[in-house]
Image 1 (tube, rainbow, N blue to C red):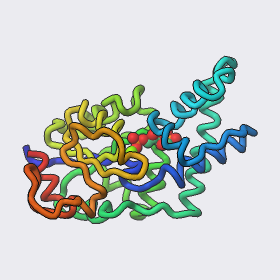
Image 2: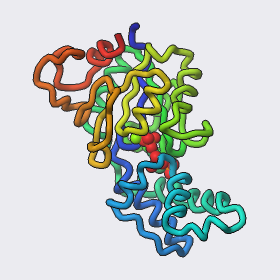
Image 3: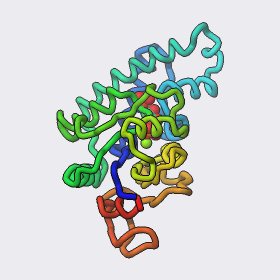
Length: 249
Ligand code: XBP
Ligand code: MG
């Protein structure tokens, strides 16, 4: 089937937002709430197995401070901490610019030139997506995406397929005509469970994960690590529109 749309994950895929962005913002929020928790880079790597900031805080409490979950309405309290975290993340994006990963801007330009639709399917909060797109690609960049699926718009976060199914429905396209670009096992599972073939661009936090079922796994979009022809892709050392079209067949 011809390639109609490319659906991008955000965190870890468009940019390395986790270690120096989200993690730092969580810690600032904890401080604001007079909590002594510090998520260091290694611990944060473990916590990333749980997608979604509120869900991640809940998971941390289950394992490190279960008594705090016994208070009345712990989720309301977690939501407040998470709102502070979002505020800090948005402020961080203004002060320390987080760059796009290699090849992301080039691929986005190519997709726009070929009029192939683009969408976002992410677990993170909607405002974070808009702020990242604007700070890296310019004020008008969010409009380049036909659909932006983010945060709590669906009940179950990745690895559940819900956010991808929601985006497919909004795009009004069959899964087979789309390619997803993801960086994590949770993301790959979500996209493939929705029937979408997936390119995985690994990063420091995800490189040891299980990517069985991916269409292709690469270090980043600018470097496939493939100097020669492989069974499923044409000769290319970058992930470009031709490679994605080929993978969609
Ligand atoms: C991203 C996430 C998010 C971010 C934080 O996962 O899991 O939780 O870490 O964002 P994926 P929020 O890249 O698989 O979508 O705090 O806004 O949830
Ligand atoms: Mg991701």
